[in-house]
Length: 531
Image (tube, rainbow, N blue to C red):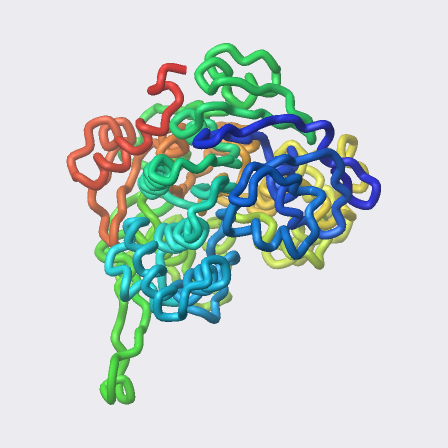
């Protein structure tokens, strides 16, 4: 397969038996997704050669040679696909029930009423509570897990022979990940369909698949039974993937008892205004309390991890700490409170910097790397001349492992010219250049491949040792918490359920919710599964 004469996938050979579960693994850019999309010819301007023989309801067909009209009948009916991000795959203008019913009408020829009833039945089969009410909901009114279940219902509407699942759980919390995986396995067994799971999560592969295919740079470098490949990998790249679990490498010395914490929060409360039904909404607003009565502190050189499922209030807590949302309660950053005044809060903005989840969206596409990294200097050190500013930018990039000798024209390039891991390093350099005392890390590795995630975590661990930085780490990944945090806060529905030293909370949890998070992480652990 090639685009504009550039080869991206070469000489891929594999087969899937009826009812078999195969995982296709590799880092971003390895060719996993394009290989799957090519089976249904969903790639614009791609030049695809070879054959793809499929045994469907019409007997044996060659997918790559089918006329487009015939292939449309195969899509969704015999071969269905679950995409990585349901929020972008689902149409925001139609209810999820309408979208599922449309597939049933087109592919099975049912009437509108029968198709709607079938949509509700399919939603119920995926375990969505109140399926009749949820069918009338729009995608933005559902949680991440509910949207993914709706996508699965749509994909399975016609009981396909083959399901292509492209990173179906990457954006989900570990507890939801387990639920979706169990759902897929159950439905796969009921329908006897084959599944091609595309993922970079080896824990997911070990728990779900029968066989695994490993891709690197468009080549299939290894394949075989999951247990055999994971216990005795033959290719160095497979070994590298297996060895990419986060490792703990932090200073575990206790904080000085009399030292002033970099961040101290007492009884933090953050709420959002909401509309009230009926005429009451004309005169006053209701409120949704996103964070309720949270108290904690972060000493110098230590990491506080905040963990919980989507909607628990983690990111809202971070925004409150950053002074980006109105809050009530007492909060001191380096001994000072937020005032809401730009001039007086300037010192706190310098002391407290943030690194966001997705570096591609948090870095301006219109600015060069020099402009992006040096932006903070323009605000906090306006007296620096251009040469001094450039020297500091170069030094900050070197600190995060980006050197102009290895990246020609580094300063003049734009974010889209870098990989995901490099973009996150640029985002960290942008935060570090003003010499902060603390970084708020909002899911800093969840959008990255496992190997890149490990590199970024090692970088953050090293910077903490060298600079004595404090971190407020927001994540849903228990493995990342174990690798990075000294203390941990467990949140659910805006409340702090329990808090304390990371080993105590995760190894001896008291609250049932914390126990479920810790157990879900153990269930997904490769080490726990004997590899």
